[in-house]
Length: 123
Image 1 (cartoon, rainbow, N blue to C red):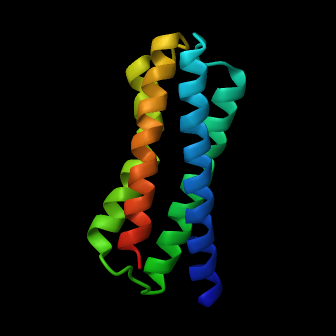
Image 2 (image 1 turned 90 degrees about the horizontal axis):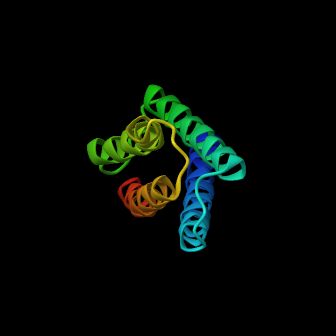
């Protein structure tokens, strides 16, 4: 039980740093006039995978009746985090231009804030 809580907590820190790095990297690419390329797509795919693993750990905690301090809003943040990147991909129709790079960067910056709030509501 304690191990699951520890994993969930540490993975939230990993997500925070990873999404922050991706956001900064995305803005840097945009300022340099670049679009979304394979290396950035790969980072986004890894980020989405880590977020989904975090969600599975959270589901395991729910099944073990380990509720976060402010459960409803914590779950909402998690669902929004899991859906954000796929929704941006659908919105941009998978295009990879400079404009799409800016959209991904803005969404990633918002995800940094969501991650911080999710961490705060989970304790």
